[in-house]
Image (spheres, one colour):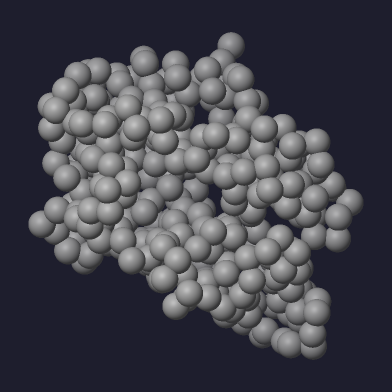
Length: 330
């Protein structure tokens, strides 16, 4: 029998062409309410900067708002791009969230800047090299621990002490997988946009996982994988909606700055093969086709959880996909 692992949602707070950031945020919060009702496990916000069609820049603020309008679902960062932030500020922000919303806050950490080199330089606050990243995680765990003190220096954070916010490592390569495994932390693999090393990364993570590491917070490996999903009542409708995603990724390639575009005839999207090569892990179609694709992926990888990314020009279409997926998976 096929295994139906927990499902979560990754939200980049898209801004459709002609809409505003306020519109995108409002639609995101309505989707958060829906995800809470439908039984999704967690809702994560990804950090991006200098991107015209996305409003997910200040992740901690979005998480706070989403947690306030929901009751059950876990809400977190997928993730905080740690080189853009002072680790102490991250501890204080997510400690504050944990004090406000209890044990519903997750902190996913990545080493990529989530933007272009110029913007990354403007944001830079800490190093992205693997050892510095690991040291920052060690300090963060100290600030979230009972003593509330960094491991590397006698710096105290009252607002994060004792919150024990769970930390995840995000990655798209074997490098991120190695860091997550050696630290004994759960691993979120970015298969939804970086498919090249997914299988190797998952395998390496499990091979090097160290439950005895000082930073370990779980006793055995735990993998959550990203997947692009667009589920509609018919294959034809789903393929048409998918053209919005194809156009978005082609805009990135061409350096074109605009909001999410409305769906078009799939045959009219030039270079759609390039977009789909980046989005190789996709489940697009009617309920039977999408469920079958996800079941096959889980069967081949034995991942513990899936986090789905769904984009649509009309927020109602995105919510329809979430609703159909929940009805046919849970």
